[in-house]
Image 1: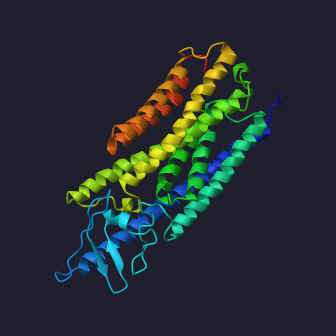
Image 2: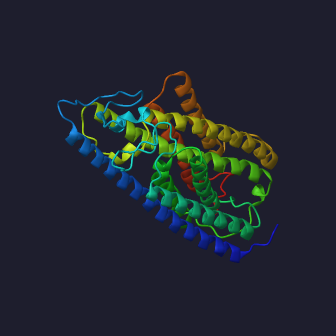
Image 3: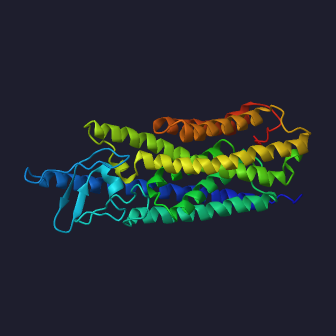
Length: 365
């Protein structure tokens, strides 16, 4: 066992504070981008509505998976001014003839127009993730082991993986519309870790001094990070679905910023794919946990509260994948089931760890 380096632990806490501050500025930049782009798009709609005459009636295209909304074709250049539901028919590089910001995150989620606030927000998120990585590494050096031996370390490492996975996906898909919500969740996780679950650098209890800690917990942290992303997508899916139904019924669009978000169907499809990957990881978490339990306590399963809730999470997400793939549980029902699964993850991490005694009581609190 390596000696504890309290100085490195203090550096870790400083880096964690700096990372939280950087993420906060990135959150503000993402929110500013949504507000600014929404305002520009509203101005385009007002201009389009003012220029429509009886001689040039508005077209009403209906895209698959989206609600109908007014659109028109203006000028010989073929520039289209379109409503929020026309996303599936418009390439992501669309922008208005006046040069205002277009809807850059279409249903294909490819990159389109480069908005300055969004670029700044992504750059700040990268910087925050780099500082966050330094915090996790210095915690590991200070403890002389992998940095996920208690609730504080699990949560801070999990928050880093949420940010890292989000940035990795950004390389291929334009998920900047998700930045406000993902970075916001990362900030909440860091604040909760520092306020409610802070634990000083220390050695592990004997049962955790095993190479299975690296295997079992690392997969659990990564799977939880992916579930966090799909939770944000499912929540947005519910909002977008409600908005699309309101517009289809002739109601006013009161959520203009959601025009920068793909359709509810596109969010659901991507969330389903990520949940499938995270479910595989959670399956290995359950399996490796059973193997570790046999080596530590001489039995694969003992109905410990933590074991039971790990299995409950597996059942909920298995039900989600099965219901959506074979029973036609799509739309809001699938979104709610995904959200319920994530709430089970949160319950398992917080309530079970703090208020239920068992062989897995390693919170450090």
